Length: 360
Image (cartoon, rainbow, N blue to C red; front, side, top):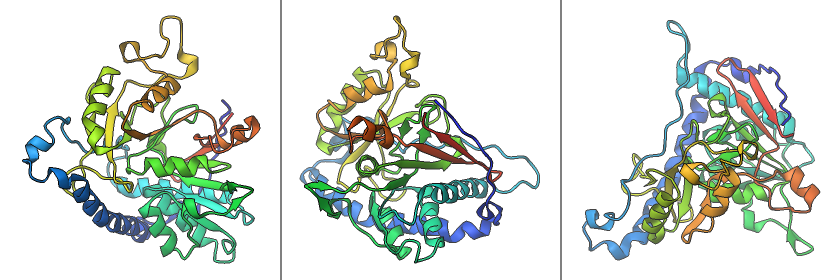
């Protein structure tokens, strides 16, 4: 893998923490907009079980849990800036640089992902002015990104509404999205925000996918810092999926809680539940040996082999592993609309620097 690193300090990185307030608030606001209909969807999903005590309804499920937290970021004692402000500064610097490098005024269809970092991607696009994006159409990965696109005054189009040419939906020129963890081969874990299914649909529809994150998300192997794989499941299949995951070596898979925003399970934009399944650090193909074949013995899984087995389980809608090949490789192989990996990942640091990891 070829990695290129450089330092870029932007004006965004130098802005005081107070300048991020509106963007962060905007992100929270659209999450709150999203939560209301999700609560109703959850009620609809569970209406047939309303006559049962709550304890009985979930008795066959693992203990409901919140998603794993991000690893802490270290700061100097004394007069150092607030850690949260440094993280937001890092996200903003990465987002602005990624947009500068990969969004062209000739692009027509642009995918916009979900999560806190994508707030700054939309901000960076809007900062270029209406004339820059006048001919662009933006494709969301969920209700949050749909709200961000509308709030920025950008043209919105759902993924299934884009034009069809010669019987095929047009490809997106580029898609920007965040990541929960990125390994040294640009494989990703996504789904911390419970939007993984639509995020994958947008990623595979793009000619190139750009991941944007802060430096906490870098890792040599997946499931090292972000310990679990988010899995979107049909609610009625959750008990069986949990049992199958345990048999595959996941020690304590759990149904994700909707707390603190809503009581009960986390319900996705598609009306599904999320299971967070922990696994030991996932192997890369180069890690495999005669003794360690990556087929799950003693819990040791290679990314591709684990993904292949997970998607076979009845009741699983999609998994939060983005692996295989990227958009540029897919075009060369004649496998358009099958690429999941980014061609590059941008990582902001608390100092305002941006590190870029490019595909080989």
